View (cartoon, rainbow, N blue to C red):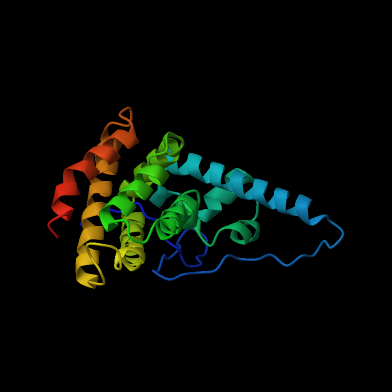
Length: 230
């Protein structure tokens, strides 16, 4: 199976040796100890701190490789304590995927919103091209691709999440034609589409000057005929 760049919900770690089990971990909510601060201002400051931590971590990951950077390294570079870091991220792996999670949420939400009688392949293909083919997404996608393919730890985590995401998509297309309630057929169809997506990302990763949107539409067109026979 190809390496997936789907996000993962990692588990809480300590220092530079974080474990990343395939479990869903809720966001950490910091108790409000400053009641006099306007909520809007506090939230903006928290969002800014989170973005700053991510920017610092991304620079270190790009410079040294994900597996060679610890949470302590990120904290030292950002001039914050580990306690502050863990208010915003469960571990360093969550940083890699944090910028992409909203896009994958969009895939499922937009797929669910499409007409129920639209064929499964057409519905899923349109959503993937719309959400993941956005040129504004390419820079972040390139960074994620480099970080994941350079880290065995992230490759394992992304594979686990690939399976979870596959199940979510199957649930959303199983009642669409031509699946019509046939679970194994829906799983096979979704799997073919995701392999086309992975192939597009891998090919584009080797030549990032070539638009990701072009790769996506090309690979999906190549498997369109196959899905009609499933």
